[in-house]
Image (cartoon, rainbow, N blue to C red):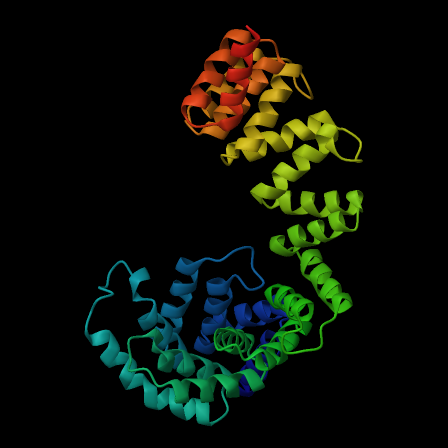
Length: 371
């Protein structure tokens, strides 16, 4: 009776997993794993390996779960431990017996796949595509991947999208992208938007492209957030553009941080907010952005959003000038000239000219003629 209940719970967890209801699936698999159910350990490993439904990807934790399941005899866990042997500090990932052990597992995996196990079909397809060093069998790989995808395995669907893109089979790419997008996969939402935008594998539709782009952005996909911000800029909707740039900036997207900093400096119709401008300029500068450093130097020099501090501004400008890039050094010279620091302005203008800046050469020549 206990075995029947375990199997029912396991099946329920698998259905939830395939439906992308991952928190509910994880709860079931965790309960089953505590009861030493090895198949559940495979799914927990998968959730950690991909970061599905969890805070972040954790390959080490995933591997530990695969190992637990493998010791209890689960074939999928056994395969995954062999595929990711580099994570085992006690074993040599270059062990020649690994491929032999994988080959020994293939008959069992084939039987599971033939019986309709979508997860065995997916793992078998991954092996046959050359993932493990086993001789590549493209036909077998495609066969099992398609069967797994037809049962709703989103990993298999994603692989089919990749191969369809690579082969420029956009009709197939659209079919699988559409399924994944409706399952809530953000990468697929973004890709589907692109397919609609370009009319690849479907009728071109700017409306559908915008709908799926916004869905991907709302789901937190940073690349979609930036693209949506650009879209609103073209529509001259600066408030919406800033909203999405700021969302992407919060995720650490450098270009978005710079855009937000510029916007809050009052360079657009958005009301100036120098404290926010300084904050985002600083975030961008920390990532090495030259625009961020210039904006931050301006904030410190003029006391915009921060206490005026010429020493910090000077440090930033010196750091920029040390790049020895003509355009950058020229901009440093212009900024010093703007703030009336003539000696440094002249020094860096000459340096910029020597580095090949046409603008610097013109200014120096003009000043010489004036004298």
